[in-house]
Image 1 (tube, rainbow, N blue to C red):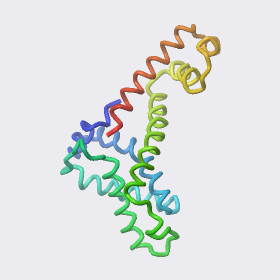
Image 2: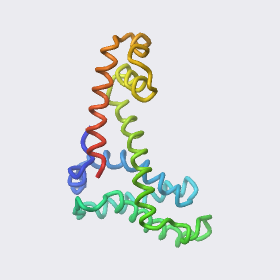
Image 3: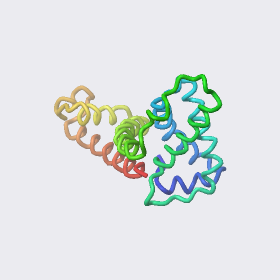
Image 4: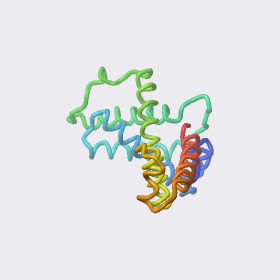
Length: 184
């Protein structure tokens, strides 16, 4: 897997870097969809809203200057919120909460950070599942996430106790690398 750090944001400035764009879409579609659903549209409309955000990203990211003191997710939230407001103006009959129910920026920052970290760990674990052999990933999952002892996990997967520890260590090391890069 490639990083999703500032280097990814630099890569997507080149519209022809298909791999970078695929990575950006893979990482941020679930988060954008989650946020869009929280704003109230029905699922089809939330998907349309996310698609409109990506259209904006295609237009804006080639000129985007990443500032390490600012949050890329905060900028994405702002883009999504602006698109949602435009969307509401075009489709006023949709059942949506009034603006007074929208969280303020500070609430969004705290809420989004907590939700994003939870989403990120889950998403990173899904990606780890695709990277590692099923037996390695399952050993880590059973041992670390489900809290089973290595002695308990090993026989079920035809692994030694030490192999379970090594598998868990490999997956967690890679997971830490991914998470460190994802916290842009």
